[in-house]
Amino acid sequence: MTRPDEAFDAMLGAALAPPERPGDRAFLVRVEHRIDAEAALARAERRFWKSFGFEALAIGALLAALWLLSSSDLLAPLAGPAHWGLAPPLLLVLALWFAGTQRLRRL
Image (cartoon, rainbow, N blue to C red; front, top):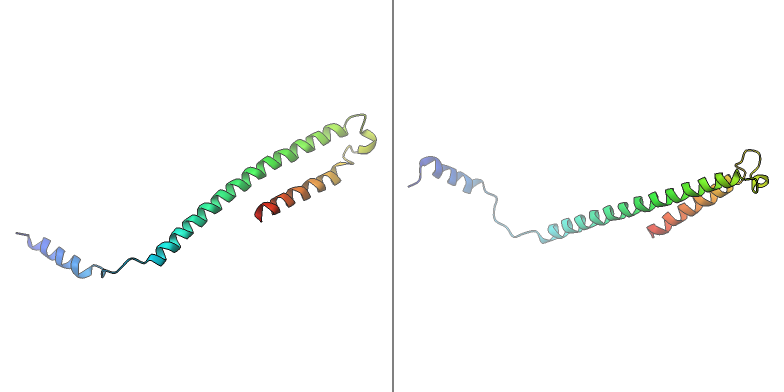
């Protein structure tokens, strides 16, 4: 035998329960696609930042090499009085190369 409170709770739960209906397959598919899209975006962002870090290190190494070479006696006439005569055009080439490679990765 059930206590009055338990019977009332059962009756109230049955009365307030949402109606039974079949599952919404279209909603489930949309949610799964959204989860897959977010996972793909996270993987793409990780790949981008990893490649960005490696390319930034490569550009830093090239700039350090340029700085060291511009201070040598052999390349001093090409470097100019400020020892950075070659730097602006080479920096432009590096920046364009970096922008181009990042753009190609998006395709």
